[in-house]
Structure formats: C-alpha cells, structure tokens
Image (cartoon, rainbow, N blue to C red; front, side, top):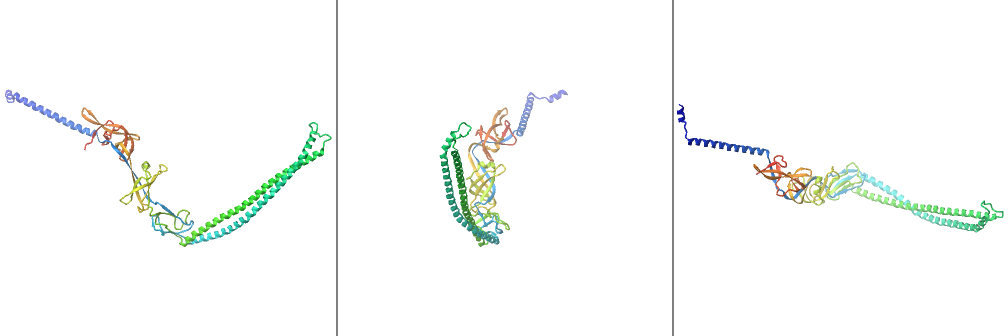
Length: 468
C-alpha cells in the first residue's frame, strides 16, 4: 500500500526544482514588502520627531520705521479775548468749539456795574486832581525856599568857620611869643625836682599858661564851628531833598491821574456798546474762561482760533520712537470718520516726556479748513534708514537682551543619506522694526536662515526643510 502511495506522489527532479524557486521568490517578495513597510514606518516616525522649518537668505536694504501717534485737533494760532476785570458777567453767548464771525457777541457784561465803576473812577480822578495841585504848589514853593535856606546856611557857616579859624591862629601866634621866654625860665631850674629858683619870672610863666589855655579854647571853638557847619548844611540839604520829593510825588500822582483817565475811557467804551464783547475776527472758540454770574478776571476771558490759521494736531508717541522722528519730518494725518488722509504735512514739534511716567508728544499744524476742534486723529510718519547689507525677518532672531543669534541650515552626509541640522550664529542687532532686523556678525548673505518651525528647535537639532 505504501509503495502505491509513493508511486502516486512521485515527482521528477525538474518539478522539485521548480517548487524551490517558487518558494524562494515568495520569501524574497515578503522580505522586500517588509523592508518597504519598515521604511514607511521609519519615515512616519521621522516626520513626527524632526522639526519642519522654513528658511530665507538674508536681504539687503533699509529698515522702514512707521511712527504713529493718536491725539486730538486743538487750537492753532490762538487769540486772547480780554476785557475789564472784576465785572459781573451777565450772559455768555457761545460755547467751546463754536464758529463765530467777526462782530458776533461772545459774552455780555453787566451794564449797571460798568456805570458804577465809571463813577468810582471819576471820583478817584477828582481826588487825585486835588492831591496833584497840592503837591505841585508845595514842590514849587518848598524847593525855592529850601534852596534859599541852603545858600544862607552855606554863607553863614562859612563865615563862622573863618572867624573861628582866625581867632585860633591869633591865639596861637600870641602863645608862641611867650613860648621861648617860658622855656628859658624852665631851663634855669636846678635838679629834677621841678622846684623853681628864687629869681624865677613868675609873670612870664603865668602869661604863657594863660595864652596856652586861650589857644586851646580857640581850637575847640574852631572845631565846634566845623561841626556846626556840617550839621547845618546837612539839615539844609535834607530840607531841599524833601522839597524835591514833593515834586516826585506830584509826578507820581500825575501818572495815577492819567491811568484813571485811561480806565474811564475803557469803561465808557464798554458802556457805549452795552457791555457786549464781540469776536474781532472770524474764528473758532477754543476756550471759555467766563461764566454767567461770575466776575471777569485779569487773564483772558476767552481764547479764539482764527479760522484762516488752521488747527493743530497734538498726539502722544512711545518714548522708544523718539529717535526716529524730528521737527520738519513729513507726516500725514488721518481724521476720524474721514477716509482720505491729509498728506504733505510737516512735524511742527517733538517734546519728550519729563520722566518715564510722562508721555512724549508731537504736534503737526493742519491747513485751514481741515477737521474740527476736538476731533480725534492719527498721525503717521515714515522714516527710512540707511541701507544695511544683512537684513533678516524679526522671527529669525532668537535669544534675549544683547545675546542675539540666528539658526541657519547646514547639510551633512550620514549613513542614511544627506541630513539638515540647525547651526547657531551670533549676531548684533543694528536696527529693527516690527517685521525685520538689520544684523551684523558672521552671518553670510548665502546662509539659509531659519525663520519659522513647527516646533521648538535648538542648535544641533536635525530639521527638515518644508517644501511647497
């Protein structure tokens, strides 16, 4: 039976060879299928672990700075409206922002109070008139009389001094006539006990001593005459100065009198127009400082802006932007609710804040007829720097503070083929705006700089360049 089965299953060598080949082919096909599957799995795993990046080469060019400031339109060339102080305001006809024509009534003063003030000034002027007349009379008579008294004092005191000096000189001369005889008598004394001899001439001694005392008396009289002359002349001069002071007082009163006349003229003019204060020119009321029921002040009652002068934009800018804007720069203004901006304008002023808590301000003068007082607006100034040889997108910069760097693509050969890695290059930022930065350092213009990635990367990481 077994023999029979062997005969039925018998195969030739040729058929056996064919079967082995089929098996080998099947095994080889399975191996390659497995390899393809592993490759697909490897690629999938690589795509999940390796960052995908975008890269750009550095460019040349200037950095464009756009400086913006938001603010309001304010009065341009303002004119003060002043009036008589300390007068009751009866009514105010305009508000801030109102447009007025020349001659329009701005506010009205109380007419009765104006008349009362006029009466007070007239009475004050009458009082000054009487004072002026009195001072002038006193100054005229007093100065003339004081001058005469001064001249008389000079003459009298001069004569007294001369007389006293003459008496002194005569007494001195008389004394010296006896001086030699007196000294001879003294020289004849014996010893040092000052006891006069028996034959001493006492008459000569008495006479000399009397003459000496008389000389000293005349010397004192001469000194008294000099002192009296000084005092009398000083008193006379003071009287003359007082008379001149009266003349000065008369002149001061005359000035006050003239001021009262000017005040009366102002009050009469205000009464003549019924206390109505009008606009001197076509203007916009930019500030109102008076209120009905209150009194006027010494300062301006109102501020108005000539319509022909145009408004002024004043806005705040970031302190960090101050270095990019200056007086005279070209600017444009976009008004709130107005589609077309105003171009061809010039920066009028740039004022930095007093401290870090105070905003910096910029102003631009607008042409006449542009905008309205108090309107919101935005200013824009575009400044272009010099051309920089190396410029990268701002997203390419990495690091903090002054420690800035970029990552560039570097290609290398591995057992798996060519791979890309990220390499760090330190740079210095020379200038930047919101989009790009001008840098310097070892960065080459042909280096592909990584500008974005789908995940965080560091120097030395493998990366894959995104393809479109």
